[in-house]
Amino acid sequence: MISVCIPNIRQVVQDDEKYTTYQVHVQVSGKTHVIEKRYSEFHSLHKQVKKSIETPDFPPKKMRSLTVKGIEQRRQALETYLQTLLDKDNVPKSLLTFLKVKNLRTVSYESSHQPVMSFQSDAYLHPPSCDSGLPDSLDEGVRMGLYEDVVEVT
Image 1 (tube, rainbow, N blue to C red):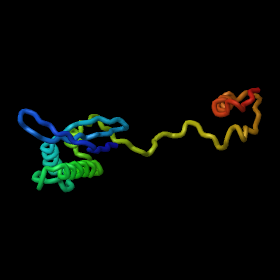
Image 2 (image 1 turned 180 degrees about the vertical axis):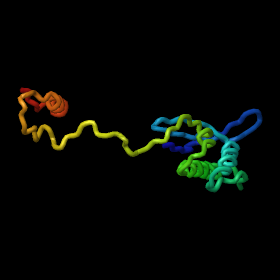
Image 3 (image 1 turned 90 degrees about the vertical axis):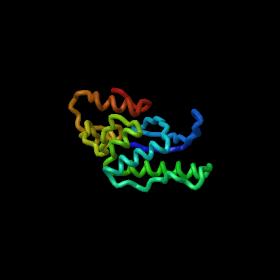
Image 4 (image 1 turned 45 degrees about the vertical axis):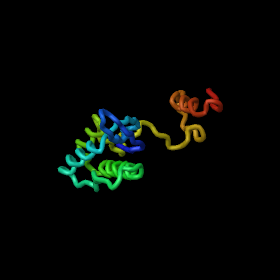
């Protein structure tokens, strides 16, 4: 599962050019990495993605004002845009590339494993009634692990 948020922006002044970057926090399988993207990069992503799937509304390039409030509204809109794309059944590869997500495996939340061992009842409260005369080392080991202070080893 992938989740994204854009908690911060950064104003950059470089070579007489001033622009805003958006710090995108991408979380994949419990690990987080941060990437910085300009609005133009988001717009390029949008143009690619809309060729293959139906996309949500994209924040317009032209804004009435590039005030702090306007930039914050754009940040929120870009965050919502990414989150909506990630909610789709088929996440476009271009989005994964944009987010710098590699080797994403589809995770199935249904377990395909059969239980290795199970207890019908609590082995300490209801010890096995049949006595074969042999020590039950598995039962004793479980009891020692779970009830270390209480178990009497015979």
